Amino acid sequence: MPTGNENAILVTGGAGYIGSHTVLALLASGFRIVVLDDLSTGRREAVPSQVPLIEGDIANADLVGRVVAEHGIGSVIHFAGSVVVPKSISDPLRYYENNTVASRTLIEVCVRNRIDKFIFSSTAAVYGMPETSPVAETARTYPINPYGASKLMTEWMLRDTAAAHDFRYVALRYFNVAGADPEGRTGLSSPNATHLLKIACQAAAGLRDRVEVFGDDYDTPDGTCIRDFIHVADLADAHVATLRYLIEGSGSNVFNCGYGRGYSVKNVIDEVKRVSGVDFEVVISDRRPGDAPGIVADTTKIGRMLAWRPRYDDLALIIRHALAWEEILKKM
Image (cartoon, rainbow, N blue to C red; front, side, top):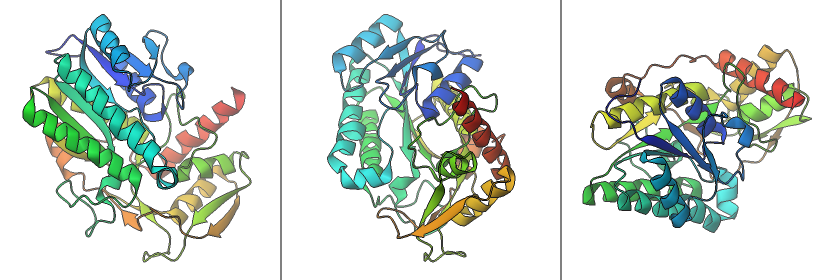
């Protein structure tokens, strides 16, 4: 149960993929939650009926201020933003608007209303092409796409705000988030998602006619990119652990969220075929701009400081939960 703080938690983007899983985890831990989401990519049905859902934009400072005052908000978990790397390259200004400018407005409202606990949904893309792997939080941050840059800029704003005000934050740098709620309550619902595991599961479920692999000539064992996949429910638990960390009075920090183990694109596709029993078509295409060859998390810090321990660290299990969600979506 919550300790030391009875104020509500504002979850921006709480109707989206990671946000909705975190709302479920927060509810299970006894926290009082309010969701703010513009529903541009989120689903109203993903928010439990007992959780207030305000439809609106975090860039609307007046709206956010009213929500904070009316619901007694004491902490913010900030998911809202744009997340597709290739689109950030073709439309960078939109990403700086949605991810950086809007976040600045949200942070300002927090300072104005004396909200001193803030959890930010950041990304491993801030590392760019790391020189070592696994990559630790102390590694150089050098994004190679506007998505990663827009997130890193927000981390900088949080850092500087914490230095100037009574304000503490944690930035959680996600690696590749995958899977769905083990109980089938929510999952990644966008039919046009760009996540590899989602796309492969859609192909296995008969919702796509093929899977496209962007480049098989990288300097990796099988030529395809390597990623660290984390189950979305484990990531949600990491947010609950982070909130408790801040409620206990701990200082600002940055944590990687992954498993410390990499799988290549071909590994993932082969495993989806094996788990599903479906042999779908795979097409090799040219590399996409903005893709790093390989990135795996060093998770020592989050395990040590938050006592976070994953429950679903198994690629086959992640795939089974993702496939089950595709079957649920077919019936919606």
